[in-house]
Image 1 (cartoon, rainbow, N blue to C red):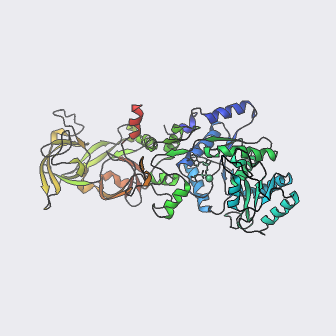
Image 2 (cartoon, rainbow, N blue to C red):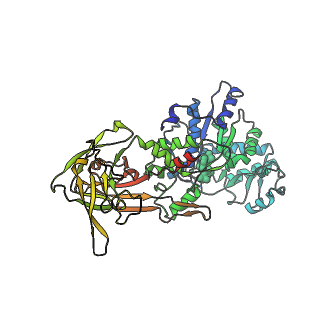
Image 3 (cartoon, helix red, strand yellow):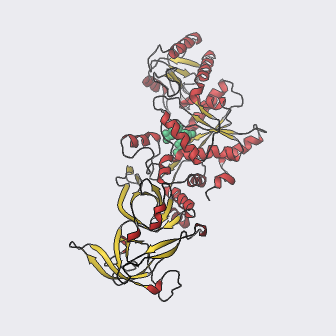
Length: 551
Ligand code: ATP
Ligand code: MG
């Protein structure tokens, strides 16, 4: 697991079937060429990771190339902050566009020339209808559209008006350039779509050079063509736009036109993915920025402690399909657990401490016990952990009046301390308000772990830390940002962050550095953050394995 996408072939899917056929047919003795075309209007999310894995993954598998192209045709929402973060995220995932980083804005002049070509062929016209009027004229699924009264302007007039639009003579919305196709087409995208609009806003790359900008449907096929893309892979919502995509390529006589293939976008339970929505969360300060560990962004997942391998494995696992579906977020969680299982040391940390005094253990004595670092990976070696008279255990591991089948600590019961001894609860100490503040226990020297003691058995094993040797830390436990219930739909979970201020980790954790990952026994996987703060990446409860086993 983990490096799957690097050295073994991914399972077959419908996109690969199309590509294989094309390579036997019209692409014979050629290479495929893909691209990943983000719009720099937000940070990338896990859905984009799927698209990145498909596009860069196909290139890798076919020994071909994948371009990075910023689809920056809408200056109103775009920003260089996003351009930078997008590149960082793709690199972090382990993909490389080499020297092929392009921007749709690089092609503004060429796209403008293509538009003029269309006008000259009488395939495009300047329209003075307002946006509302255009919508009204367009009709809908049941009603055919009506032709614009400006549709029959002469080529000369259209050329002159288009140039004037470019030169800034008109206000935003006053005029648009539209393709002249068919107002009665059953496909609404073919009803004389707008291909250029006026927007007097500075562009993050071209500044004020242009005040007209091409629409996505026009810019995309032609940008693909200019980069000699063979397969333009996009999400299903563009299926109805394919006819238009092909129309531009055909009318403009593009040789070896790219082929658009649509796949189902990734939807995850407990997750809202659109950039527009994620931006609202950031702007309304519901989260701590785009990289908040609760965000489904790649930077958020990185901060949460996810590895690139786990995300790529997830994308491989869910596969590529042609129809929309909802993926259970527990699959993503399963992937990070699987990835970290053999890579991380298992250590002990007490998150809700309860003091235990081992009354028959000598006061000044400290003993260093052997502890294996991993149950599944011997190569991670061993460490020594201190044991002494005062320890902390989890509050949840003690009950004064336990129900049946409670195998942890209660008055008179004996449990095993992991890597150490059996202890027995002799006395419960409470404060004035009746809350338990301390337990007095005794230990049995004969039961030391690793000595082969078989005298008697106990059912519960607890983790613990030596009080005087432990390291006090703060721990952040995250829950889903979105509740996902059938009745309510998606609503914000108000309790998605729980901070525990008084946690205690075993002594060996003093070596931990920012970015190190560990398994805390019985609590899950954690990543070390700044200043002795730990973030839980994922708990140990594997909901997905349970679902999977039932199937
Ligand atoms: P959003 O709706 O989140 O803003 P978008 O489609 O507008 O997403 P783009 O930057 O235009 O975002 O997307 C870049 C590429 O990533 C496109 O090819 C798009 O189809 C793909 N993509 C976006 N969201 C998903 C998703 N949830 N699953 C798979 N691919 C996606
Ligand atoms: Mg988009």
